[in-house]
Length: 32
Image 1 (cartoon, rainbow, N blue to C red):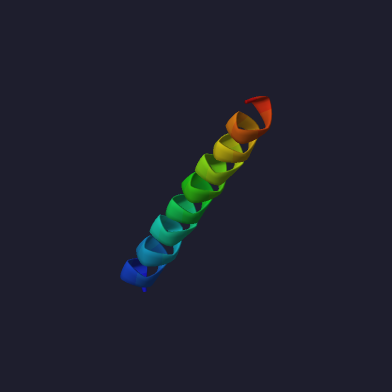
Image 2 (cartoon, rainbow, N blue to C red):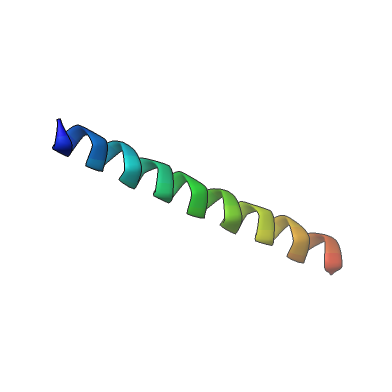
């Protein structure tokens, strides 16, 4: 059970970071 929670939390963190990167790319694109 612990392993499943670890995988889910790791996936959530990766998804969150990916979302931030996409957002930053959009902001940079708009500024140029």
